Image 1 (tube, rainbow, N blue to C red):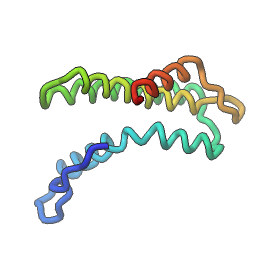
Image 2 (cartoon, rainbow, N blue to C red):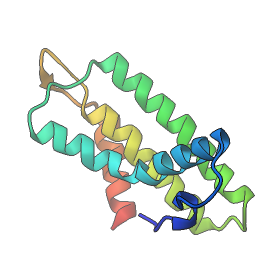
Image 3 (cartoon, rainbow, N blue to C red):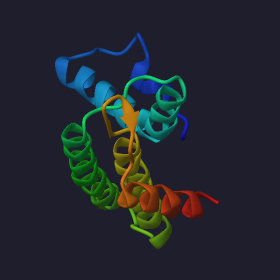
Length: 126
């Protein structure tokens, strides 16, 4: 996780609604890497898994949003291979985390795609 510029949250600045929106989006993007860990903790605590359809919808939405944010990050500076690799591997990890947490009848039953995605993201992280 990268450090956040404290100037964006300085109480002395003149704040408008657009600044609040930018602050909210920045915090959401900043917290994205914590999603797989959060979902893993929920699964370890025995929280009931989510339905497969909801998991697939969340995984698809996270892939679209993750790839969009990866490409968008290249717009504001030089887009390196490392930056693209990091964005794609994080997107795979988040989508796979939703798929891992899916199940039926209160029991987790992850698909082979979910396990393969988590494996790819783990190898990329190592």
